[in-house]
Length: 160
Length: 396
Image (tube, rainbow over all chains, first blue to last red; front, side):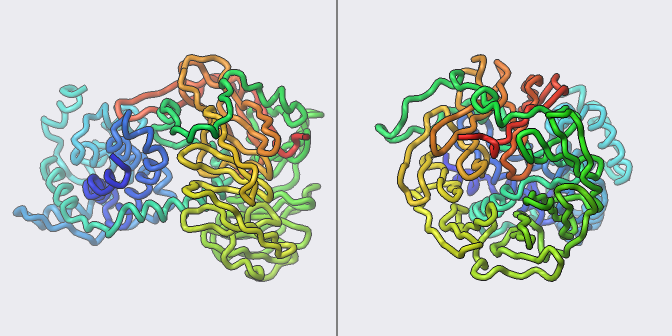
């Protein structure tokens, strides 16, 4: 597969992921392009040996918590998604509140609930300890007034 | 009370709402050009970011990159491959250009055969390896994002676009003026500060102060190494070299299909079919470098005739393999920089901005830290001293 084919095929999914990570379309496009730029530099090597998509997603998550924050002003989004499910109001509010979280907490939640990764996977991906992942998730859920379920408390043990 | 299910649904709903921009691929190409400009500018000197680790791709590739065979080159063009372990260390090849400094200091650039400029505790200092002493040049009131060293002055741009000078002999820092946009390239001459930013255009300001002035005929140029400026094509290849002092403009013979084409006043290097090649500005003297050589990041020219290449050595357990090669484009002389740790496919060399000064910790060992989705090369040990190679001090 050529790099351009990869971008065409996986671009939309990466943008969606970027949107959930950053909370707005411009930053999402920035983040994806930045990560793809890195990938393009080593495409010949990564495409055969490694999983390019996992590489890009890891790059995006890390980038979003690290140097990214120095370049972008923090901003709240007014861009409320309106899904086709019943309680639009609740979800819209939750989306807005996500934007108030510190970056790392948000990234941890996105990796946990959108990417469905285990705490260990998240810890490895971000280069932090599993305890830190848990405490970040705890603080974030607390701030969002989300009740951690039995599923969440078991998650780490089940998948570790 | 909300549930985790709400979070999952909210995120999925948000993802489904994403507006797709028209063309990601062309966005990436444009970003690569801008990045190239930025790469030349190097890392901000401010705060802890003094060291730019050249060529290091921050996530996940430092190890992987070195394991893949280089692209094939057309038959007949290729010099005999020199085994990577047969490359003599730069410290032996060019002992006159080597200095050592305590690892507690981070070098900015070498100033002479024995002197190294340091930025430390909001001051510029000079370490002299002949005496083992450090002397303070002066306080830096606003942290530098870009530094230039002239014959008389050290100049810098701060993170808020302020432009400053400090006498090279030491003294008081003086604010000269303000740039209109981020400073990527900076030079200090006897009478002026000269700079360019992300967009083309070379500007200057008298050292006495004033407002930025676009230099005549330099609207489409980017400052390279004073007095030279470059014109780039859309891909970021250097296509023209202009001497800003004399106005002399020299076209560059860019090979068909060249990538990351970069030039000093006499020599150019870049990739063709992913293989590094070297030729004179006018296209003569072209040669494809041995398979041992790989491009290093986006810009690997070190000064007007030396370049830094990564080493291709697929045998990870081989001992005595340098981390990188400094190569004399004119004579073909080369020296290895640093040393790989057997079993580890990586390790990097320090360089600040595009100063022709490299440094590494010869006592450090590398190891590969892998998590299930990515790997990176980390360092352990060392911490005693940096070996500093002042490429500008190489005689020959």
